[in-house]
Length: 128
Figure 1 (cartoon, helix red, strand yellow):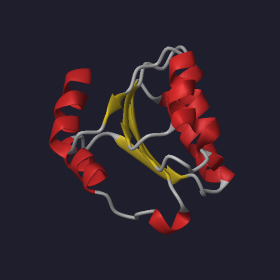
Figure 2 (cartoon, one colour):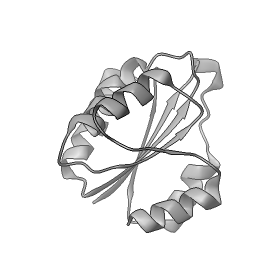
Figure 3 (spheres, one colour):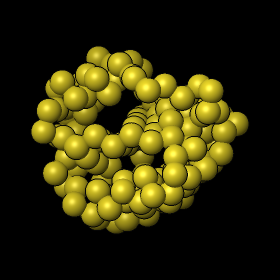
């Protein structure tokens, strides 16, 4: 299974319920499972994301970040993606988040900066 994870690490008033990037990924990769959450999601929802990781063969993680927002409830899912040696994710980050970047570097996981929907589609297609 291919898993797309879209996490919004932002103040609650900035959370969006539709996103051009996710719509494009659903269109281009219709067989992929899409998981969306934010830093204010319930722990049960994040737990579902962690369980999806156990079945995934390919993982794309897209973080839409606000610099000063804590990882919040998303932390366990992010840690699983970064720590699990069986997962070799493609990671895109929109915005900056010092804590995530520090964690990724510690775990030797590379990430790319989001440069737009079309560019990310090209990058993900190369990843697959």
